[in-house]
Image (tube, rainbow, N blue to C red; front, side):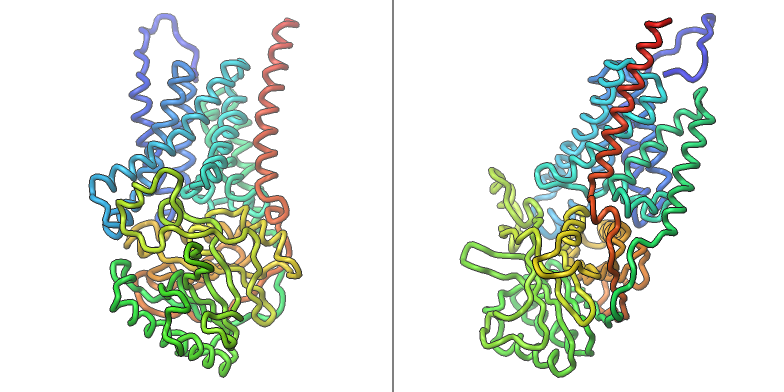
Length: 528
């Protein structure tokens, strides 16, 4: 890749080695952590992608391009998810060297997605003899985003820190209701490719493309895809702030029961929500008067409760669940009449054990670590005019699954009007995992046009409106209750209707366009 005509009298410049290019892209990938919350310097991500593409284009062959891509993915993941060390070592009791090795092993594996993307892009460019604009604008962005999408579902998926999340407040945010988070990552990559062309003879067209994408994103952000339904409901979101190393301690379990009982009954609300596993005991293990006593308060005040609690259907079927109580429980002490939602997208190693990895899970002390998955489509919890659809912690990383539940609600129901995420991020201490997860929830609201309520143990307990803005939030690592009035929203964004299909179609169209570009150039060369 050359940006000026070489002078034959100039001495030859030494070519940078593949290892040197890998070092550059590893640093560029690591610096991209600052593009995400809590920093929000989203232009860094575009610059990082531009650096990756530049080094790949100047690589010596397909293998080198793959290695350069791997280094970028390794740096990106290691820097962005370093907080996993806290959950594995501090709270999971894994020896420090093994915990550090596990984080690096994850980064090593995630790097292969970028390696395949960049190696594949280099192979296509060579095979099709693509000119620079076609490689920069069509092939590299498409391959980058397609393998990000693949990372989001293969082996149950790990889409944390996917590129699109950095743009919940950038000019690209307006595209989220159309093409979702992966589509935003694709557009960021297109802009990165166009930036490289600013040093090429196509600089005017490249600049025009960057401006057009940005201006269109701002204009799309002014559109409203959803509309208010019914009257707002009052909500109280509880933040217990129970340290993870005390959460399953015998004496602390009983004090947590009292803490949440007092917090729930402190004041009425249309919806009171607790964090994930606020109660760590099964309903049948609770004091006989615990849930009936809470139900009596709810019935007296016309309040409704969503309570995080594990459930068991048998001695081998345990669920990470929430139950919804609308003022009565019925006669069954196990709670036969409450609303129920079971987490269906479980966390590997933390909530289910992949085949052949029990030895790894045995190195940690993780309670409730072998669970059963709930159904993909589950009903919402109806509260007055609103329908609240829960998701539990890690589940809100999967935008297409939430959109699918809104587009195809449980039989006999209308689509939910607001979303509720209940989480326990105390596993990650006071790290950037908490603001990163809040940013993920913001993206879900942009994609669906629904408000998101977040009830968490240590943070971030917050209310996000249907435009992706945090309107209220409790301080992290404090005990408290967040009270507000929240308006539910109805209607369907294009993303609710189509999920990732539109993004995938655009990425496929880009690769098809590159092929036609190459074919046309080849035919013109023959004709000449």
